[in-house]
Image (cartoon, rainbow, N blue to C red; front, side, top):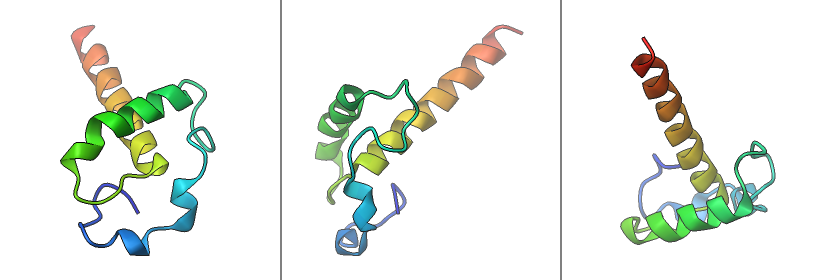
Length: 74
């Protein structure tokens, strides 16, 4: 599950999605960063975001920044 999930579907989420913020996350994603991401974005969602959602958000932003920096260097 993840960000594409529709509101009201939270009760069908994967139970593992609420695991520790650092499990299965790259080393550069700290528990503090995950928590800050949840605090920042939760007000904009009608369903409860999970640690897995926050980690996906962080990774996607990281990928975007990587592409932008690579393009800027050309």
